[in-house]
Image (cartoon, rainbow, N blue to C red; front, side):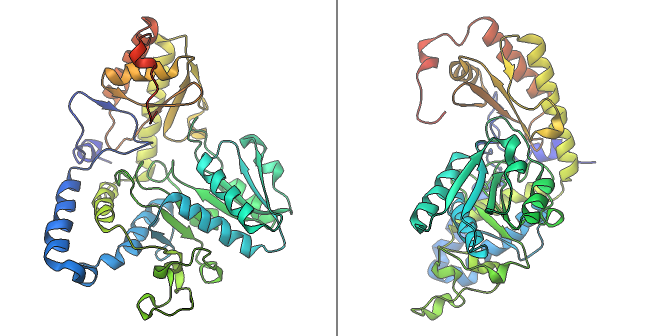
Amino acid sequence: MTDFEASRARFDLPQGVTYLDGNSLGPMPKSAVERARQTIADEWGPMLITGWNKAGWMNLPGQLGDRIGRLIGAPAGSTVVGDTLSIKVYQAVASALELRPGRKRVLSDNGNFPSDLYMADGLLRSLGQGHDLKVVDPEAVLDAIDESIAAVMLTQVDYRSGRLHDMKKITEKAHEAGAIMIWDLAHSAGALPIDLTACNADFAVGCTYKYLNGGPGAPAFIHVRPDLIDQVRPALSGWLGHAAPFAFDLDYRPGDGISRMRVGTPPVIQMAVLDTALDAFDDISMEALRARSIELSERFISEVEAGCKQVELASPRDPQARGSQVSFRFAEGYAAMQALIARGVIGDFRAPDIMRFGFCPLYNTPEEVSHAAAELCDIIATDGWDKPAFKTRKAVT
């Protein structure tokens, strides 16, 4: 039986705060400070540049990739960590297009994270070869997949509503049409069971600062299906994706396997923190975590709807059709969220009117969920949001 009390004890959660925003930025593991200190004081300090060899810094991208791979159903040697999610999206789309040279269209949906759409559109414009990005409603994705599509690029869990795509069904349809399938797991890795191998996904990318708790700006990851890895030409030919980085050849030769998807120098301190953050999953069953997540989200929906008639559920009602978050619509959602945060319950807001709450069984409890629901209902019932301070938009919402 999964011990969620033990996993909660791993995190440094501020007293008096109910944190329901781990789908945006995970909380700090208690071990992060010491691990960062060790990396700085015991490795960088005395070892200086020899730390790349003595402390194994250069191997961290692959080691972390394999640890994340276990959580997303990817075999060892098929996932690597480094750079940002936007970079990894660019790599995946560029590689997919080269694998389907006779096709000119990338398909996505309007529930995708906008940055993914920006990166794909920017790449297609730069190519200047007549490619286009087709964006449809999430419900229309399956019908839009045909033989004109080079690549299908989707985020598994909608960042606004939490709607969950059927990864296996969509991947199968993409392959039937001869398209390459790219999944963004930013809002699902570490939150629910994923089996990239069983789904036969071609590419997957994701960030590590949400449910994986790697800290602000933690590096992203990319997975390539093992039988495709050596066919993939990295469009971003960074020096660490070279077959022999320290030969300093003037001509680029891609490295063997997933190493070719490395680009720049790894952020060692951030990777060290991510490494210790992943320890929280060592004794966790993803199936048990998913069951607990549904329990928490169902409790939240039930209690909010029972106590607050002015809000509208923006997430799928069926828990199997959503990820580990719940969203409610409210006309003054931004102000209501600021009022909630002022009371020590932290969620976030997504324009135009969505209040978003993430549930992470590693540290969230049923009692916290009930407390959050009660505070939200009280704020709505008493117009507790109706203050100028709560209506002033901040840089980060």
